[in-house]
Structures are given as structure tokens and as C-alpha cells.
Image (cartoon, rainbow, N blue to C red; front, side, top):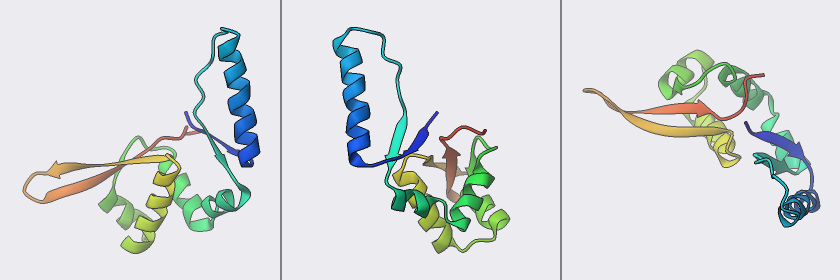
Length: 115
């Protein structure tokens, strides 16, 4: 599960320092999958189009790119831009598979919890 936190670079390093102290104390460290984002980047994710995309993906384990284009009624340029942004923050994974007799198709898998 990926957790997104709003904060600065200083917040990130404070968190890393706390984890380092746990390691130095030889206590069990729980793995963290946290993405620290500055306010501007967080607001970019929360744009209406991206919010709609996240809502669409949250109850899916995987979805084909062509299906997303059709169901969301987005242009390929717009969808690609939004997917690249989510990929940058490791909120999705994009892979490709062979589509027998029709070439290659993209598969989008969300990496965030469906809460």
C-alpha cells in the first residue's frame, strides 16, 4: 500500500532520520511505502481529471488502456499525460502484453489501496 503525505524535503528527511534511529536501535522497522509530495505537486494530482481517473482505477486490479479511453471518454494525449503523472509517483504500473493477432496492448494496474 502506498501512502501519500503532503510535506517538504525537510519532512522527508525527518522521517528518514526517525527510521535510521530505529535501525540503529536494532528495533524492528516496519516497511514504509510513503511518497512525500510538496503542496504544488499534490494539487496537480488532485486536478478534476486526475481525481476522476483515480476514482475510476481505485476498484480495479488492472484495466486495458483501450477500455480506459472508451469508458473515460478522454483523448489519448490527455490520458497519456495523466497516466505518466501517476506513474511518476508510483501510483500505477504500466505493462504491455501481446494481443493475439492485433499487436500489443497496455495494461494499467493501480498501486494504491481501494479504500
